[in-house]
Length: 402
Ligand SMILES: Cc1cc2nc3c(=O)[nH]c(=O)nc-3n(C[C@H](O)[C@H](O)[C@H](O)COP(=O)(O)OP(=O)(O)OC[C@H]3O[C@@H](n4cnc5c(N)ncnc54)[C@H](O)[C@@H]3O)c2cc1C
Image 1 (tube, rainbow, N blue to C red):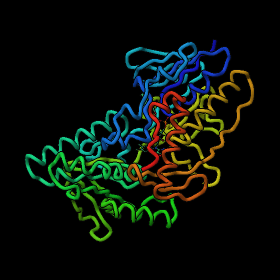
Image 2 (image 1 turned 135 degrees about the horizontal axis):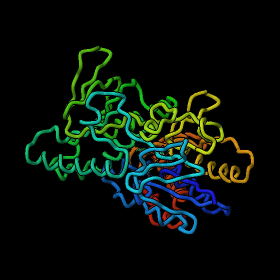
Image 3 (image 1 turned 120 degrees about the vertical axis):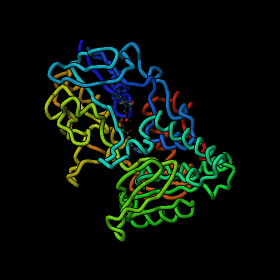
Image 4 (image 1 turned 30 degrees about the horizontal axis):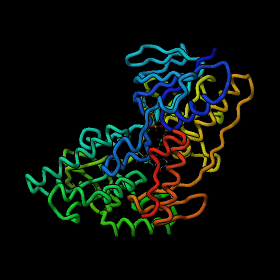
């Protein structure tokens, strides 16, 4: 009996297991994750804003894996030894594998910016997202006591996809924050500080202008062309083209870091040939150095043959990779040739709060309310992939008529 070990029950890892567990064969699957639940990382901003409880975006892993085929172990992965074919866990020691799937996902990337880790809130998992919401509640209470307006400013570092989605979720909750602080909603200031001079580079001018107008109409203050140099306690220091090296400062009691992500630190600690926690993988999704190791999702870099650059790491590509790994593992177990992975992008839709969105879906531009319905349909499809009908019915987004 061959042992298949899957590390990480995110989009890539859980999809691998769910596809494999349906197949017969002389293999057993072990799945390891540090949490007992799977969470939809694409919805973390809603937990951070407090518009959804964590239960809405997560479900127990045990509910969706077949215990006759899969052993689930809740533990922290420390490192992988590809020569010995073992994985070291924090509490349960060593696990042996014949085939390994590494799907340990993303963590925050601070690019060496001083103070970014210590003085900004990160949003990388359920705990950190919940901590952001708790922090905001505390700041609103602090304003009541001190009347210091810095408590009312929510500052997001980065106006990328994640930063914009978080800002939109903050807008949805602005009235609640204001009530907690005893002020009017317009006194809750939502700010995005961004180094680039424009936003959302993956979209054309039409969609970008739509996004800019929407952001403006929602009262989000967008500070583009501001290169963050340091995060001091309660303060973001930045340079602009006009002011050069002379740093400017903006103060806020809530500072959230969303400027980028890298792959799991386990990759570097385990000696993978990685950059920022990502390994450039082969066309069949395997480690270039070890034929029995697959690397998928945010810990991988898969080259786009058109641009000759890696595809952006997304839940969409992670899920497709998970499915493909299952196919290739079955081939490998039978001694058959492996199939190259081909990514089929279904587009990118960014939500800006619960009722606005914009982007590209199936090669068509979508904006406003229809885009928000499409975004919810995409999320529901992903939930169906990860958890099946039961989790879709329990956690799906069916508030389509708003
Ligand atoms: C706010 C936000 C919005 C996003 N929106 C979109 C979107 O609209 N569309 C899209 O396609 N993508 C989106 N993304 C990106 C997407 O979430 C990631 O690309 C995706 O989560 C990657 O999937 P993954 O399976 O590789 O890793 P993850 O989803 O990060 O899962 C990794 C799993 O590994 C576990 N794990 C990690 N380290 C360890 C360890 N050492 N030991 C044990 N277990 C461990 C974690 O608990 C987790 O379950 C968004 C991301 C964010 C943060």
